[in-house]
Image (cartoon, rainbow, N blue to C red; front, side, top):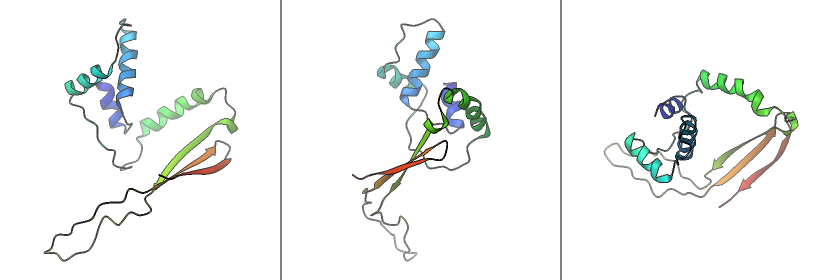
Length: 142
């Protein structure tokens, strides 16, 4: 359970497959190679530890310094053997092009209700190499 607390405190998303991988690694190190972190085991683990899935709410704070230093320490070994032009970063952003504002002015005494939100969006992916080279962006519709 400590791994989940540490990761979430550092704002690192924790999902089921990550917990299963960690559990498998720990049990192998403890000498239980026959252990299987199945879907059923994960469900019971989440129930025992009072865990549930939540939607992440944006980037509310800066990344903790410990996380930055940890990545800086590991980055060299992760990228060793690769040329700088072969190291790429991809990021994406969404554009809800038919979305209405989520706030509206109304008279104080009256309730203000919104309509159904449009989920029509475009996703744009950007690619940049460690040397600054850029590839053509990819736009994904429905």
